Image (cartoon, rainbow, N blue to C red; front, side, top):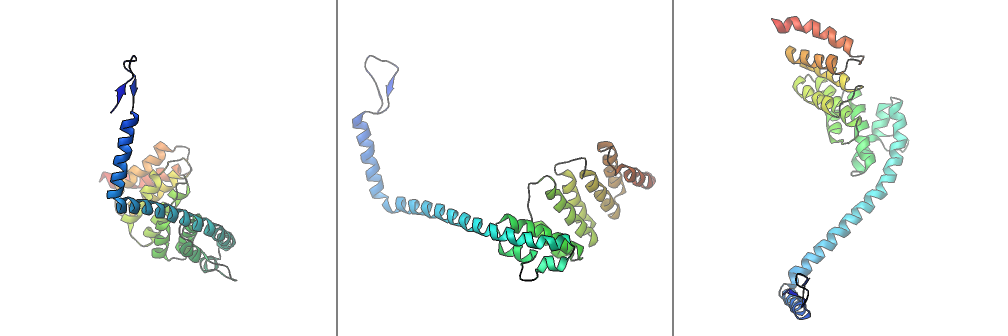
Length: 233
């Protein structure tokens, strides 16, 4: 029990030596009664820590290999040699292999993005959507770009509702004056295709009102003018 030092009211001594010894004895009794449980928890914690450390060591080792493989294949991607970029050539791994074989690494994640773009260019829309959906990034530009590309794939599949959803995500993510107007224009076109002229007009108006210096404003005004007659009927 706690007690006060004589002559010094208000100042507490946390534990007397006798009380502390009693607490130690209680802890020993508890440990003896629950030895298996206590040891089991301790072992589980150690195993979890060791497992995480081992996983990080493995991933860190894989990262360098994956980055080197990605650096080689990006040249093919940029040269528009899409088949070589996707499947590899001359002993080099392709984007699909890097994305699948080095999961958990940054290189694998980025390979999924590149693969999605390449597959979209090839007209393999379902595969492109799958790869782009597996990509994740907190980057200001590339995350929204991936959402917009998924929208493109759905629009090519004549699935306007799904395209609208992804264009909306792209337009709403970290708005900026360079790319947001582009995504809004895509959104407006998808809304037109979905026979939603009123929504399309509202979207084009956002471009005009919120991004007056954008190069997209001229087209936004033109499309608004064409649709306003339909909306008024």
